Image 1: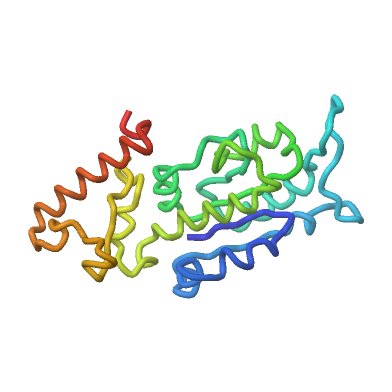
Image 2: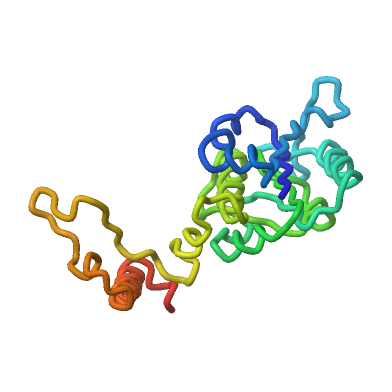
Amino acid sequence: MRIDIITLFPEMFEGPLNYSIIKRAQAKGLAEIHLHNLRDFSDNKHRKVDDYAFGGGAGMVMMMQPIVSCLEALKKERVYDEIIFLTPDGELFDQPIANKLSMASNIILMCGHYKGIDERLREHYFTREISIGNYVLTGGELAAAVISDAVIRLLPGVLSDETSALSDSFQDNLLSPPVYTRPAEFNGWTVPDVLISGNEKEIRKWQHEKALERTRTRRPGLID
């Protein structure tokens, strides 16, 4: 899988995309992440990428020319399954979206800034618009890192145990059940007997019941 990220601040990705599972996925050749500084595509001698909004009002708007130049340059090199604009008013990112994106070969993530981008670009260039939550960030970089992480960890071969991702929260619209590890007793706190019983059928039943209970309590909307 290849992810191209268009950003004003490529330095922001030095940490999130160069450690742990995401770093290993790239080292194995299972994922490629390419950063493109939008200022490099500006025709302005000062590498300007924003301008005032028609109609007035506070805040600037990202200029069309640099975005179009960058997108066209990328599209000449390969076909993209999705060209995604990261914006607070996009569809809310969730596990089903991550699952679907993990099956793509090439995607573009466009990091929004300021008051956003010219509406004409949204109408003619982007196949999808995504938000990671009902709040506003200073830019789309953190959202791009979140989406990249959520998607790449689903790729075959990325996790040492591929079944691990299948039991994550939200995969079946349920939160994960409680988990425990050794020792079986610590400070007088004990592990539920069923988990150390060796009875696989009863363990799976307990885990499903606890997942339902936790979901009803913490995220009832998932069940509804």
